[in-house]
Amino acid sequence: MKSFTVLIKHILELTKGRSLAILIAVTLPVLSPLAFAADDIWSLDSATSSARFFQGSRANPDSLNTGVARVTGHVKLDPHDLDNSVFDLSMYPADEQWGEALTSEGALPAGYVPDSTDHTLLTFQSKRILRIGDDKLEVIGNLTVTRAERTITVTPNNAYSGPVYGDAVLHAETRQISFVFPLSAALSSGHSTPGNLKEKRELNLSGPARIGYETFPGLLSAIQATNWPPVVQNERCQMPSTIGEDYHGSTCTGTVIATTRHDNCEMPSTVGEDYSGPTCTPASGDQTTIVLDLKLHQSSVNNTAANLLVTPEK
Image (cartoon, rainbow, N blue to C red; front, side, top):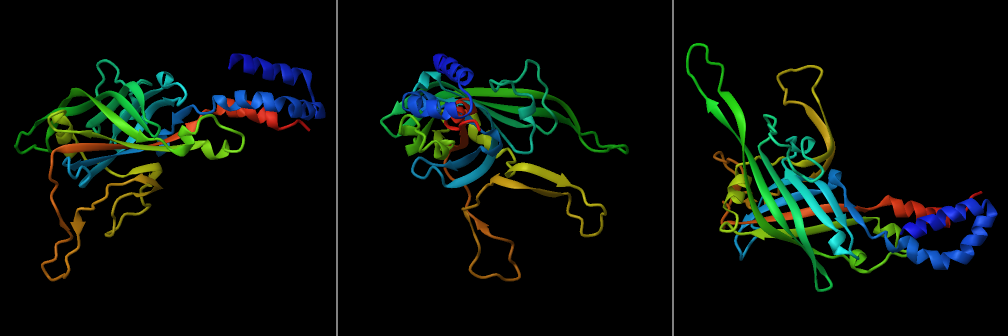
């Protein structure tokens, strides 16, 4: 790739104006494979990626959607060299601020004290990435669940103003798991070509990891004990200028990326005076499924180089 970059600079130094278009017509058949060979390297778009959590059994693993999470971190996916690929991901409730403290490798600084609103953090670091047949990708790595717990002191007396929370104590548990991603035709088709470059600039990669309770006992309880609000992109909340009897809090806008689906709830066939809302079937089973919904983008460096070759100077 280095020699290709040097060649581009040499072309731009030696040619100007219309002469560049003439030179392109001669050299493009030779340069095109080089220009697009590395364009299949993908990276994570944290603003539009998310995770879904399910509780179920081996027979029915996705019976209940228990929450959705924001996903941030670093992904480098090179389908031509899986040893050159990496998945370092962080998953946490959309209203928590873990992402501001995490390093680029998804780790917390030594001695970090979480904000009072931070409770649950899941991090995944890949160790091996394997291709299964021609249509699947298995990403094997360590999943760590970190929970922030605080002591609560309640002293009832005349001056009581509520519970007093102590310093946070972090509890972490790690197990090895694997995600399996079906490969799209765009990813498994090999090198890019000028004709399909535009269609391949975005890739949706979605795949599950199924974890039994006996494999990771603390995972299910941590997910159940956490509030998982919808994941929203570009969320903006504003308090109303006046507060009256109909006040319901701040007004928020943004694009919803993921929200929990209550597929286990049904409306009753008849509604009477004792109506209390939809009827929900309790969750059953002790298997947890984490589905990663990742939005990947191509690296822009090689696309820029390719554009220099196909757009003559005027």
